[in-house]
Length: 66
Image (cartoon, rainbow, N blue to C red):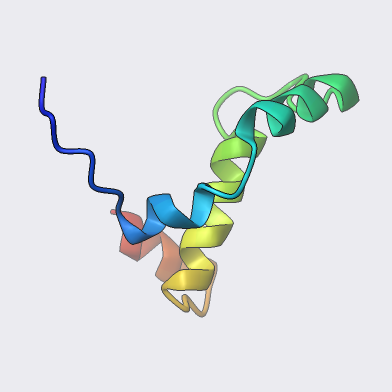
């Protein structure tokens, strides 16, 4: 196991967020009730990535990810 604990800039954007509280709220409101692949947490990360990279469209976002 690596001892490198550097945070990426993407990881630093998530550090102020309390993901445990976020997950509790998602379960309370049943936002991921019928979700199979794109969960609310991954959707939040996807939107943040698109904002940071200034992606102009969903097609461009798809190209960035693949």
